Length: 354
Image 1 (tube, rainbow, N blue to C red):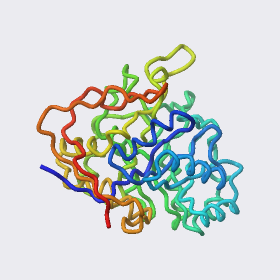
Image 2: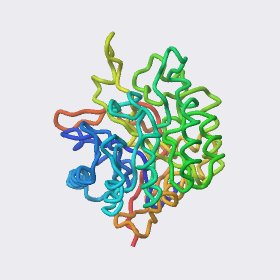
Image 3: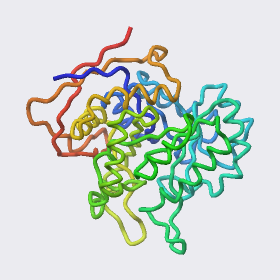
């Protein structure tokens, strides 16, 4: 049994910087993808057009056969004029991180109203606003990792109401409430879903650092809501892997003052993993829409206009196959999600679209 997918596109991926990027970046294609929507939370974050394209050049030097869509980090330095400049240069979106909720978000925002002039400019030039949909934990307000996403949703509604023509993506949804919120919004609001959130629930990361990510996986009913919307084939829900690599020593250990790193690494096995997961809940026929068609339509990235467009053929594995335990390059190493577990699909062929 085989399935062919036209130009899989990952609309949320972390490619890091420095020597570890030499290990990470080639895994986009290894996992079956030829488009990567690149997150800007580096050190320092990508806040200008010049920084974005310098970073893009570094990625293209490692692997020139992927289409990298660049983003800016929403910060006080970002101005409406910079938005117009970025759009003209080809930057696709702006990512908003609430302060302190995830990796390299120390410079995140605390109030959206202060950025209304930036959002107005984004709406005007048609740039995408990507929202990390959580609020910071607050013991006095009883806000924590399990309810940070539902608590954020009023911000989504308010932004959509204020800027109805602004394309907004609620990133890596994990709850039924988030799914319902996006469905209630208009056609300019979409949502990414990760592979790992289709697999995990709270029990899978409680006490298991390799499955710990932000936002954390929630309850079985929340996972079911994600699976149901994928199975439905809703056009405003699509894959954004949030593949977030961290060195093993940062994932496997914690101390009284430092938690383990938040993030799981799915890039090197992404397309076979998504096929494997969708098959488990009867949604394999939705694979093309989920990993390519829906996201490309929302981001206006047609396959035929992409120079690296490919057809990726997956085949059902006839013999037991395990995900590799570790990927190593020089002095860098990474442990992927699903390491050591059986996976039912593999990439059989990749062919250029003429």
